[in-house]
Image 1 (cartoon, rainbow, N blue to C red):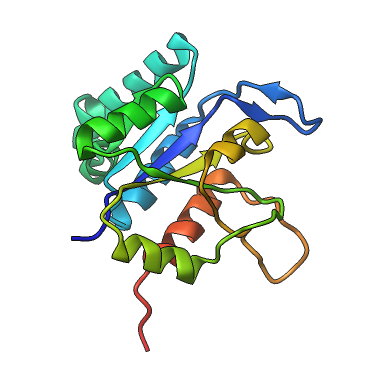
Image 2: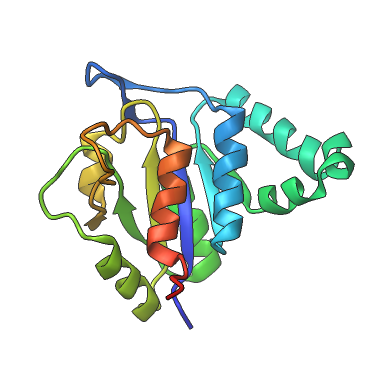
Length: 189
């Protein structure tokens, strides 16, 4: 049986353009688009980590609208994707939830648009996931990315997404879709 695989979108602690530790806002489009990508690639769960109760409650209301409210009848497939979204206050709570569900702490995979030492490529990471029984947690950062504190807690760090130019400012939802496709996408010959 392949490893369980989860995604976490962290809104704190992340950095701003000046490298300061900040908390970012949850955006409706990130919730929807990353959930749809996670559902497409059969991810076991999509966590949203935010320390502010008001932001978590807002996200719960968005989920309710699409899974039980008017949105559930207007666009049923949206609710199908959003059922995998889980809301947590921080990374430690996310780790505890994954451990509770799987019986093991996950291997944490960091992501960053910035190059770093010791990165792993997508084919190698994909093989490791396929051959492991340990769960994995892919960490995505908002703002200008994950803090060094979070990066240091991870045992794997995916290589940055390289496009066809030197421009590297993808939205987190676009980056998540590309990463999932590179890790789990089926290549037809």
